[in-house]
Length: 218
Image 1: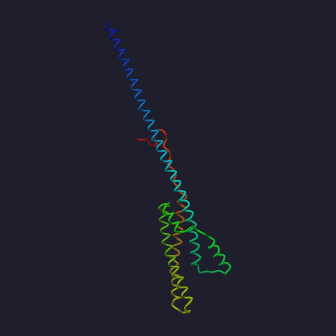
Image 2 (image 1 turned 60 degrees about the horizontal axis):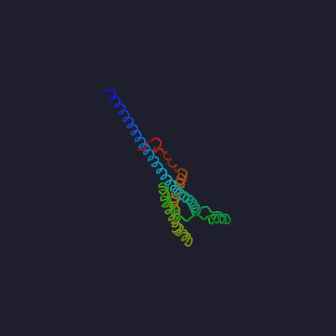
Image 3 (image 1 turned 135 degrees about the vertical axis):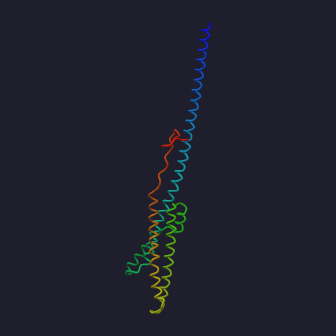
């Protein structure tokens, strides 16, 4: 009788343990499934956020690229105009007329508009180069206008008037400012080209298991 009772208890205990183990496995499996589902949802949310960020960056990049192309036009036209105004060698009338027609036919974007778009979309390095070029060109323009004013006055004065010497001195003083403006424009061109060709790649998507490459999600 005792043996029968003992066997029954053992059998019942085995059933209880078996049932308890089955329940534990079920609970663990459910928890793991929930964690996996949550990790998948988290990964999907991250990928959605990154996709939205990438789309936003694409729109900004397109606007930045457009502003950069306009900047290239403006800078080149500014350089040619400055070179034409400050050169000392002049050609015969037909050649000069063709030069002026070529400069007049070029319709660059408005410089103020270009600068505003650069302020909105350009990188910090391009902005710094834009400011430096703007300051250098303002100084060169001021020196040119001063020299040009003296030239106009000298043309109305006597051949030995002091104004002619002042005009000559102003011409010499203008050249360093013109050279600096040219250097600053070239630095801006380099900054624009560098930024256009160094667009960062988009961030990689997060795998659906919720882990990033080389790192596990915490």
